[in-house]
Amino acid sequence: MLMRCGTAILLCATLAALACRERTPATPPQNLARRNVPPSPPAAPPTSSPFQYPIYSFPQRTPPNEPALNPEVLPRVLRRVDPEYTPEARKARIAGIVVVEVIVERDCRVGAARVLKPLPFGLSQKAVEAVRQWRFSPATHEGKPIRAFFTVTVDFRPEDE
Image (cartoon, rainbow, N blue to C red; front, top):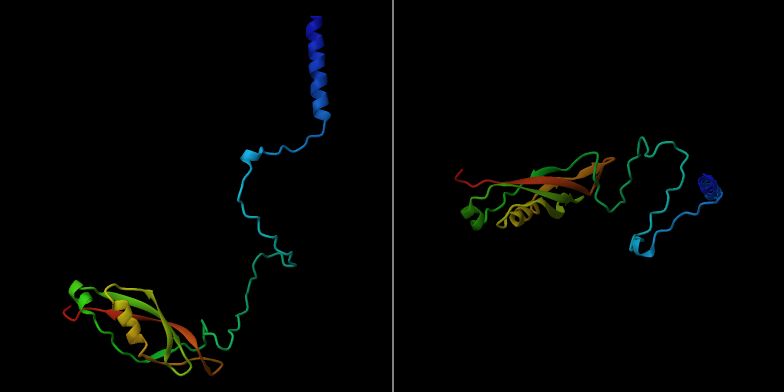
């Protein structure tokens, strides 16, 4: 009985000593540490606004030589040239649309074009060739002609349909 009480007292004293001791954070072993982890991004500077994003953003002014994404008056197609149908596409009976994004210059011509939705068998190239011949009314901002992005669709349908 005396032995059991002594063991219990010794156990309680050991636990109390461990509880009072300051704990140091455990460091992971070197073989478990993460390697090749990029550093975390820097914290954003504190703002005076309680909102994370602005409620209203003012429109960005486009630099003078850059095409505008949202002009006041959009370009309109004045002259359209129909694309040629390639023999391979006609043989494969390919039909559909090609979506082309163009930059309409101040002088109403197409400055650049890129295909957003292609079709096979050379129809995308034929669509770009045809769109480069189109003429547009210029986009305007504050009454002045400006360069602008514009998206057009070119429809391909076989003649025998």
